Image (cartoon, rainbow, N blue to C red):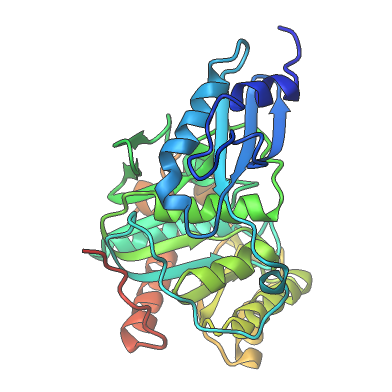
Length: 365
């Protein structure tokens, strides 16, 4: 198969008329960030702020035009809007405004699961937390906002793209929760080489353009770190609170401190820290080994004036069930490992019920 040229992609898109102008989406400068990876094409469509939800048909037309090209198997287009430079600069923390989009009918609370660095098991905690909340009688959604490293499809054993009713995306449903991830839209091995604005736009679309229905709690699995994506999410989405995941060693806890400081600046309360990989109990002799140390999260939480929500052991069954697409809360619901996540879910529910910062209901008539 000959290499696909960017000019060929732009020629195909040049046939799509700009609904707000006299030219095409190409001649009017709306197409940005064309990236070609073998048979996969990704690009952004730059629109006016606030127009995204109304231009879903345009996005689909652009995807279809490129997908019709010879050698193209997969196309991903996102709607993005440039903000004025003054808005892009760091601002004083402000209360997030409710997300104005038709995809969310009613959400009681949005809870972010975050980590200051990657590799601490944030997605595993997010998935098991969502499932534990569901086991406790809550209607729950799980949004994988980690665009560059989506893990939720593998963790929940999801396959295939989600359905659509022509206007909104129907999220996958598995183990009693609704789930959405960029990993369900692209090949598992596809690298998402996107800049910050495209990442943020994709996250907003996965919230606004997904038919979540009525949810008690929407759990957000945030990207690791404290960058633009996290800042924008905190500004655009009414977060009820955050859960910060760390392992016990000092270097991970240092990054966890940064994560908590980020939420403080965004005026989002930190419900607490979860210490993942807390200790390892030998399955043969029963002896506990503190491979990464132990109790560091509890000590750090005390120093920062937040709670330690729980300690999750480093256990083979958590890794195995995650790789198999049946997380420990589902696969072994009565195990001590599952109980750790259920206790964390109870602590999060108590925080929400205490109204530490009640997120406004997002409702549309």
